[in-house]
Amino acid sequence: MKKCRIEKKGNGFAVRGTNFLNYCDADIYAYYLANTLNNGGKLIYVSGVDEAIEKHNQLEEVTNGDWLRACWNRNAECYLHTKNVYALKDNPLHGNKHQWYKDADQWWEYMPIETKAVISGIDSQTATDYHYRAFWAKIQPSDKNCIHKYWRHRNGLIRLDEDDANSLQMEVICELADLQLEQEYSKSREDMCDENGSFDEEYQDRFNDIYDEIEARLLDNEL
Image (cartoon, rainbow, N blue to C red):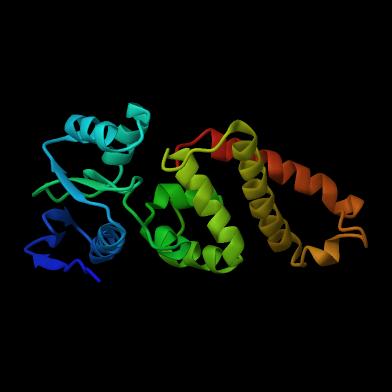
């Protein structure tokens, strides 16, 4: 089984000529690259994104060029969304918030404060890392994955049809609204609902207001 070694650079890490600022990003790239090579794929070095798109369309199923260009720009001058891996050899080290993350917790840890503030609703001017970690710790793993998926969709890393995108957005907003309502009333959702799972009247109006506030916050700001 082929493995991909991570080399320490002066200001980062490299995997077969593709450079990363953070070890975790190099580690994830090494995993995907090894998986590609072990499943009959290839590592294809190119001079830039135009050549990458051209070779992709020659060797694989023709894919929308704008989509491949977005993948390239958001994944440290390479992309892994295909059978093969296309990468710029000896690419310069640079920061890139759209690199790969192995799970939702790692993604949240590396997100900029601006993104965390939009999702959580916590004021970035007064909050510290502790506040954002505490917020994230209150969310169930499945809900974390849902929020991470929504961020990936909003940033063009995955494509969803309109109905699925709308359903995902509603799910995320409901999850965030439930959490805020629980914090405001110091009660669990179950304690605020009737036997059918619907909010009691005294909580429903507030939930609706919170839902609208979160929806506006998400849609009016970049993630």
